[in-house]
Amino acid sequence: MQFFSSWRVLVVAVAALALNGCASSPDEMVQCGTVSSYLAPDNSANLYRVVVTHLDDVAVISRPNYLLSPGEHKFTVAELINSPELKVLLSARKVKVFTVNVAADQRYHIGAKFNTDKIYIGQNSLYWQPVVWQTESHQCEMKR
Image 1: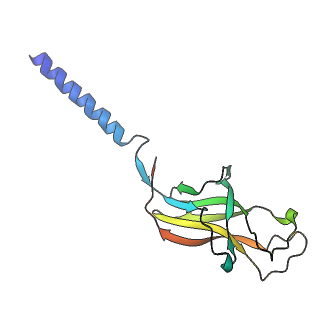
Image 2: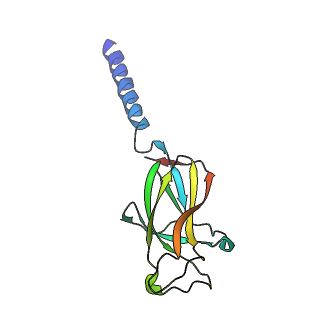
Image 3: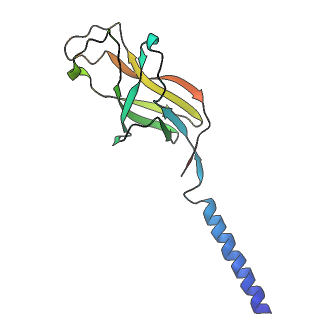
């Protein structure tokens, strides 16, 4: 009888350890923030969409949302400015890099600010800059 009791204690102990291991498994939820590029900003405010090409120096396929750990993240983006006032050579349309300081449970909408007050000559790429054009509270959780 003592043998079965000890065996039962051992099984319960192993099960408890296994369950404890699950609590810190890769499925554990961690805090995050969201960077989004899917919303079309207000073109009348000279804001336009962007396409993300790299995130933290790693090539990515552009997505509508990026769930990221809190901290600084580097985005490489290409502008999608479709304004009739834009008279810049196609060869001047280069990607730009900017940093978003992501906080937990915040959503950052990124886009391109068209600088209509600049004069554009030849290869001038100062006609636009990447920006966070809207920030909002947004619950975010991602698996570790």
